[in-house]
Length: 216
Image 1 (tube, rainbow, N blue to C red):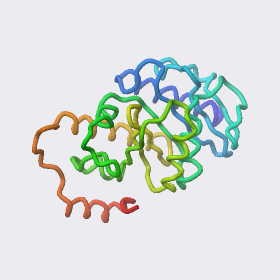
Image 2 (tube, one colour; image 1 turned 90 degrees about the vertical axis):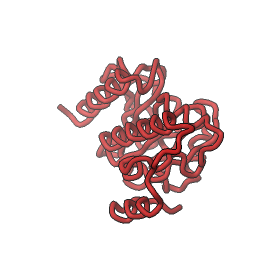
Image 3 (cartoon, rainbow, N blue to C red; image 1 turned 30 degrees about the vertical axis):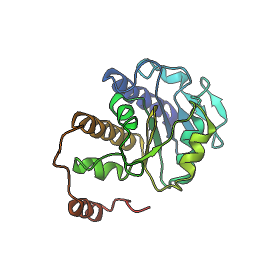
């Protein structure tokens, strides 16, 4: 099996897992992955993550031009912004997961660090998650907002829309995305409760021990 066919199968497998667990409904969400030759695989526009045909997943060149497969997601500017600005990005995952979207609507979250420090892995796998404002779906301005972060964030939360996570490979991006949604779920469940989160001193210890990019 060639690299491209194997990668297409892997994207379809992970996408179905996300869909089956209710993490991105209908035809929402998209995934991209960088191949060894610098080209990309991207889930097609209007497709459901639960029913992807691997052979129709979009294959794009290094300049994001279509080589084969169906037309790609309209969120290409969002994906390319991470590849262009964050060194070592090998995959990008964008979902419309319920609890992350719910958290983006809360009026009192910190837009510079939207996830509260509730679990060690939320900090370790994501660092600080930036809340970006609302954009029209497919708007180039989403990509420009990510570029404005200059590669300093591995994840962002689009207000009224959903989370976007970059990783060194597909597995890393998927696992970090799952951690983001679970942390957001905890944050929503604990609204109005004086929960015992991780203290600042322990946050700093985690950042130092696991070499987490934290300061802007």
